[in-house]
Structures are given as structure tokens and as C-alpha cells.
Length: 60
Image (cartoon, rainbow, N blue to C red; front, side, top):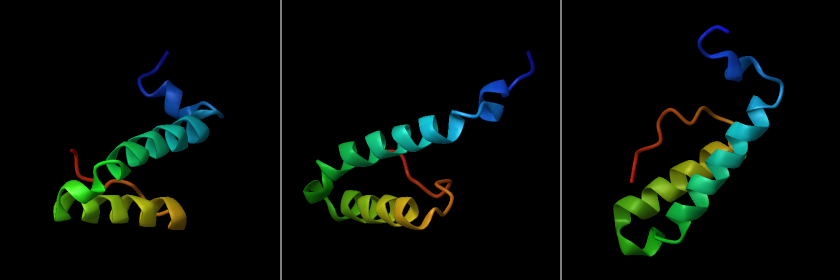
């Protein structure tokens, strides 16, 4: 097996989308705690809705 074989798997896009939604719903619950978290939630929702790359997400 080569490194990164899971990203070549047909189910990977679904797995990735599920994980992204999970991370976004967690941050959604905390959006009112600070302006930075709210802005990050809005960024994530935008990328999910538009299909843009999620590389610009910040960790919380």
C-alpha cells in the first residue's frame, strides 16, 4: 500500500464531507462565545455551501 491510499478510495469524499460537517457543528455550538469563533463558523459554512477548499479553516 502506498501512503495516502485512503484519499484515492471512492468513499473518501463522503468521509471527508462528514468529518467537515462534524467539525462545523461543533464550532456552531460555540459561535456565540467570541467574534473569532463566529467568524470561523461563517467561513466554514461558506466553504461547505460553495464547495471551496477547506484549507483556510482555523483550528479551535
